[in-house]
Length: 244
Ligand SMILES: Nc1ncnc2c1ncn2[C@@H]1O[C@H](COP(=O)(O)OP(=O)(O)O)[C@@H](O)[C@H]1O
Ligand SMILES: [Mg+2]
Image 1 (cartoon, rainbow, N blue to C red):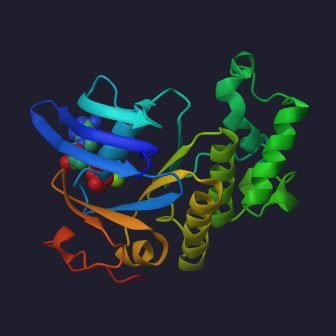
Image 2 (cartoon, helix red, strand yellow):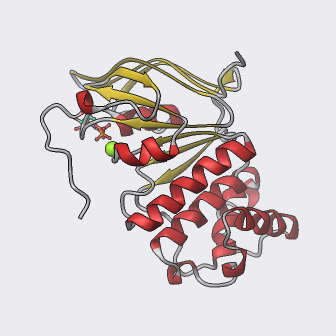
């Protein structure tokens, strides 16, 4: 088997006296959408933040994060969150161009700027891949929630990362938009050979779109495999939510 594109090995995270992740191993292949499921507070976001290198001095992190066989570098992973962080008054295209800022260090403190033509062309291509090229010159704030999340995904593509980490990317969206955004993440994994790790709130969405599912319970991996398998053990004390 090919080496995984993303490899999280023995991840432990501790805040003060409390260990949140107890040595978690998760891998994601290029071309794969992995869904991470688990009850509130089990450590999903902590895992994603550890994978992205986003846990600061407040936490103690150990374990290894490797991308394509090497220790994760600054630009190796792109992030998509539940709360969509676009700049609403900038155009959709400028928001996507911002994904390239990591490799354009001189521009980083100068927003808003006219991005170089090559970057704008690349960003246009990224918007085309999420089906929103026709909205490039609208201000981002005028788009629907689902469209804004697709713009955030285009911005991640413009970062040229091989790994995409998404924390509840569809939790704020209506059901139709959620289906569309997850379908897009699966398609990008498959066609662009990205490794996509998505924390999801709804097991049924994972069953429909993910290639594989990992279940966390109290900071440990308790299942890893077929996305259609029963996942009741992850939600021991809850009545499964009914989508309104
Ligand atoms: N910065 C922090 N300091 C202390 N505890 C934290 C911090 N961040 C998260 N936690 C705790 O870690 C546990 C897991 O949180 P989280 O990873 O956000 O869970 P999930 O995303 O699965 O709902 C929770 O008990 C939460 O309170
Ligand atoms: Mg979370």
